Length: 317
Image (tube, rainbow, N blue to C red; front, side, top):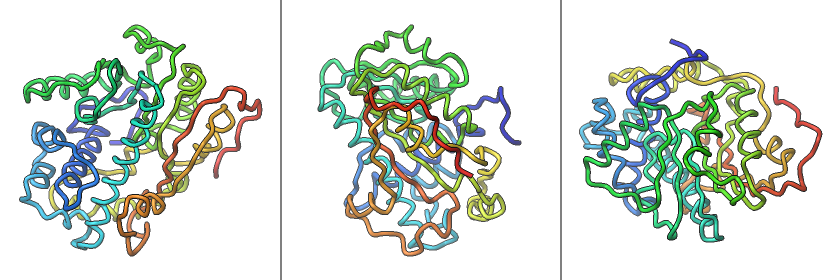
């Protein structure tokens, strides 16, 4: 079933399933030799969701190569890709707090456990926003595990299509203080106009010196749905039916770097291969050939209102 305006999900359905997939990837990356990341909560959270495919992955009962047409090299690239992505977001938010920011907002937080696993400076407040069922599940599961947040975690059950800025303010968010925003693995699940609205709202809530970390997937503009379904065929063969083309929004949208620059953000864009090199991971042999959504540009930006432009950026076609 495709997306619609009022759809919702838990961590075993629709978009929520992809959050569990990502957590499984973090668990595999944590267990890998010379690991770039350490997420001790990823595997137990995945097991608690209860999707057998993902549980088998993190427990070693399913060869991860099954996710990549039984190609070990591609399987390694996928695990490295998740490690690199996670480390990039970790490094950006920790750099922001090292620079004195004490207010962090994680949008569509899914099974993200940064509020529990990172070494936050004292007095850091971490706001997590997601669907009510997602927030309730993660909070109760981590509590049952005996996990304690390493920051002042404020979990907010709200749909990003609703008035989430009000929900933030109602939970103590201070728009006059600098904020570190994280929007990881989110934008492709938003319609193009909703992506623009998200950044407009973030900008309106951001004091000068605030930061944002996100990513841009150019391939979403002209996604070949047949090819995308073929890329996930190995998953279906092993009992997991994720139809990615039905979950994402394709078609023309404004490139993220352009939109942020027009709104007053100083943007640094790093292609995926640049991050692989930065973190000492071998580049995938076939580039992005096996995944229509594999071409990712990672974005970090700092807000400077004086740089904003009255001219909106052009939409990509």
